[in-house]
Length: 39
Image 1 (cartoon, one colour):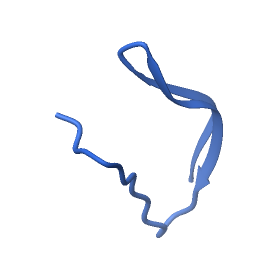
Image 2 (cartoon, one colour; image 1 turned 120 degrees about the vertical axis):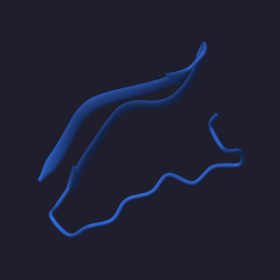
Image 3 (cartoon, rainbow, N blue to C red; image 1 turned 90 degrees about the vertical axis):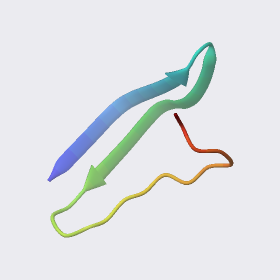
Image 4 (cartoon, rainbow, N blue to C red; image 1 turned 60 degrees about the horizontal axis):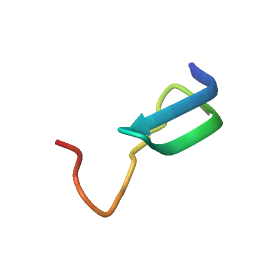
């Protein structure tokens, strides 16, 4: 199990996620989809 709590993700000065919480259980698949690929 992977647990994220109070997670913040930024790209430059732009905040992409703020105060996010997630739990990923064994066998679950997770992906992030956006307008453009990160390089």
